[in-house]
Amino acid sequence: MAYRRVIGASASEDRLERLIEDRLKPGADKDKIDKRIWDLFGETWAIMFTDLSGFSRNVAKFGIIHFLQTIFESERMLIPIIEDHDGVLLKAEGDSLLVIFRNAQKAMQSAVAMQQTLLKYNENRLAEEQVLLCVGIGYGEVLRIGDLDVYGHQVNSASKLGEDTAEAYEILVTPEVYTVFSNSSEFEFQPTPAGHYVLKWQK
Image (tube, rainbow, N blue to C red; front, side):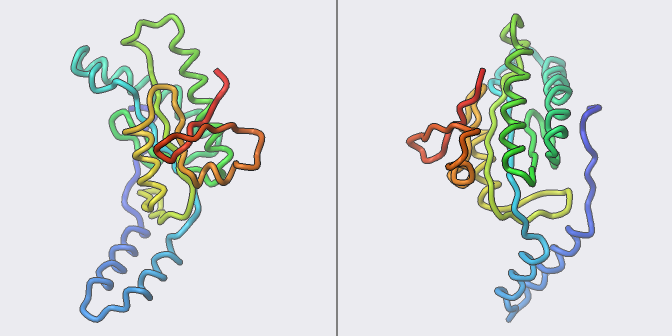
């Protein structure tokens, strides 16, 4: 796809692999090695996972070309918004995107802009032609391995929210994200029984 980035292996990945190998050796000081790994790769980021609602059903019903069209249209519209808000696209797999933002505020603003753009795009379109976005966002310390991948609790939580929990047009965030903005008037959240929060955005 024209809007995708080609991301290869990096020196960071090689370094991590060597440290993991050291950690597996008999008698290894795992606490010391873990500290080295966090010193090398530990960073604080906002993590965004996106998914397209009803995508699998539409693929089964309308076929692979419809699948490719929807992917192309979503990336054409969303990746420029991500870049305008200083997001870094790490992965684009199927109908999902993994994006990181150094600035949590920009992550939230990007998510809102993405939903607003798609809301306008979907006006007067047939249901099967609409692009319906689900978003999950986490925030906290993660292991960032160059431009290859990120690992950590907030990564897992954002993935769960964006890919499994959120419905069309929803932006779900972890409690850690809510804490960042709990004293801010810019964003309004609604708690859920499951313990995460729904960002209320202007439609």
